[in-house]
Image (cartoon, rainbow, N blue to C red):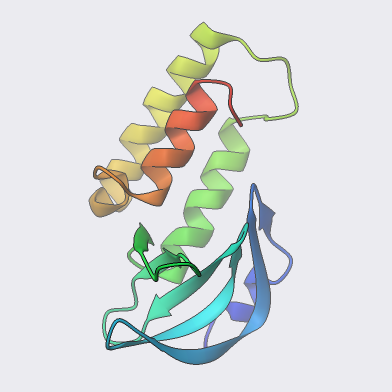
Length: 130
């Protein structure tokens, strides 16, 4: 699959990528497994190209992005705008998250709907959990 080798060097919060893919059937759909999200796996739904975090316990799907290319773009935008290693400032972080949310919504509106991966990540970053 295209762009997978580029992902191999990206480490973002709990995401890690292998640079290759393995097909796996989950919930009667075929996914190309491309990496991990902490203890879960990250896969590309073959018929849509959508990227999901998939629970290894119950196969629950959590939408990440509409494509691998958008996932790469989101990670780059996030890293360009938020320093997780810096001192946490609630007011500043809130403004940063609002800015990111607006950009992300323009690029891939589905990524910020309720119960999506980016929605969870931005909420945790805003609250200082991550």
